[in-house]
Image 1 (cartoon, rainbow, N blue to C red):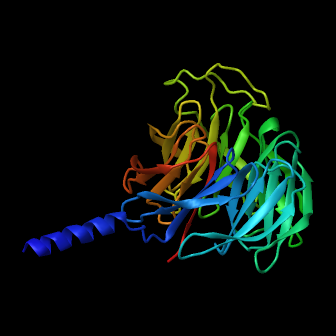
Image 2 (image 1 turned 90 degrees about the horizontal axis):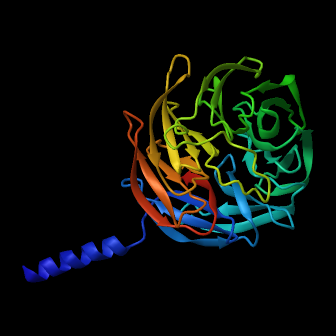
Image 3 (image 1 turned 180 degrees about the vertical axis):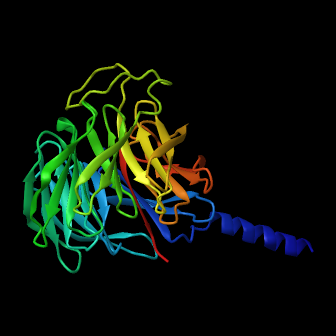
Length: 372
């Protein structure tokens, strides 16, 4: 009996120390270290395990997945400006180099179209959106095949499910641009080319509902979530504005644009990321000054938001991502020593912290990929 107990104890110990056999991997760009951290996410418990780091060699920030989830892309924002791609090992999560090209601008946001034809980059410094063609093997091709002058401080660009429209959060003009994306990668205005948000809201990141009926944009400086209805043409119509959920509680003043060298110590609204669960039931936004994430329930009939609650998370949360099954949310913190994982209550949408793993300097962008 004692031998059996010893054997059982040994097996339990080995199981606890063995690598997680997860098929969901998390990537977090660590700008100050020039690395991308690779994690395994336990799909049963939400635990995170650091698998290793990929050296990039520059200030790596935004990342994007290819449409087929076989490749990871990242933008290097230090000189020389680059776009870099890797193959993803679906069994281990390891990244192997695919190719890199010179970037025509510094991009704080990149994305790919659902058809796997293009990678798009929005340039805050260059006031422009660029479109790069992707080879059939996922490699990047430079120079860009499409370009569109946006006005001051383009901060994001996403493409709809059809691959025919693109939407740009234009922080410096309080506009969300609505654009046509041609089969050749050219961009042009759709309708009058833009819709307005609240004054000095600073449109930052956007998400489309899974059914493509609505677009939600988070304002960096006002913290307002603006909801737009998409017409059949792809044009946007503003239907609702949801105020910042934490400004009053944390006594945050209205935000300001933060150029290099910004030094204002006044606590101000500084919203960052916005994400939807894949089933379209819940929406989450991060706010960096208060180090919180706020969650909202989405009305199925009209897409309007109802606040669930706000939760303390990693310090200065820059990026968030949600797993394909909608069960787990991952948050990075620009001033946090760890990356955190959170369970999403499937009834209420409430978040519960369930795990963490070490993070590098200035952890910002979070990308999640699952393999079945």
